Length: 110
Image 1: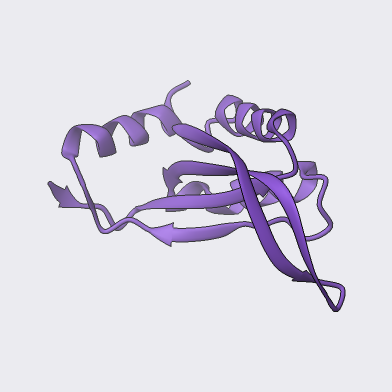
Image 2: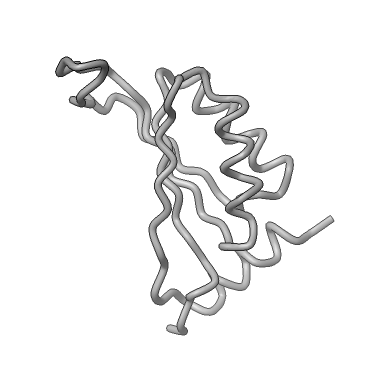
């Protein structure tokens, strides 16, 4: 295991599987992420416009490098159908060297 301070996990929720797939595909094609995991059928409860709401959503977990985060955020904000899409960045403290190297190669390959 090695230190992984230049890597990040990004959480994005989407209204359905089609939107989650579209956002993931765009991020992958632009080499902004190495991987996107789609977790369907989550139920979200949240405050929106002064009321508690609930909805079915898909959680997208994206693996990337910190240097790609500004472009990834810009893409999500531009392409997401929500007025205020979730874009949360979690730090990665450690990971296996081979996996971290794969992330780096994936987001920098031409």
